Length: 174
Image (cartoon, rainbow, N blue to C red; front, side, top):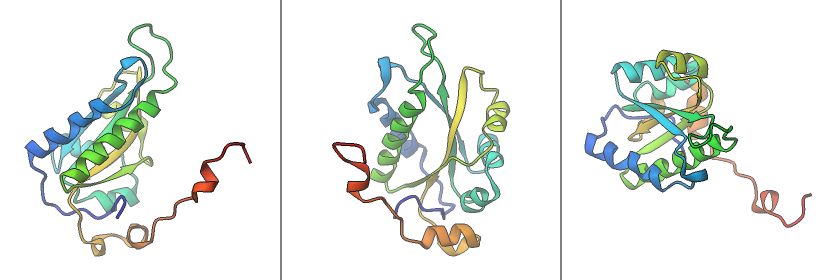
């Protein structure tokens, strides 16, 4: 099941979390820059609450039991020369994928959320202006979908739709 929306309140072990997040170092990135930063909260702590409060009502419904919530930020410029880093969000996405794979190797699920209040979450954590909020993620063990509100429940139970290979990979456009 890709990206479940229902999470069990079972807390993740600190040692497991510490094993998952370092895998981001293997992400492909531009100029060996690490434009990503993330703020991680565990269920009920102040960081968790701030990330949770930045989410839409539908995302709150599905992450209310998630033992870990975190917000990703991308540095808009390169450290080495101050030039705009037009691939910062790409690099954050690659690091996100690495963390997602790391989570699954430890039996955890994750759910990425692009619908949140980026300005609010950045302000609430005092994030410097050279960073932008990119996404929020929930991390934890699979929960029972019946605990979800109607919309997230339907999304959780529906089969995932993916475009056909020929629609996205070709040698000439169109």
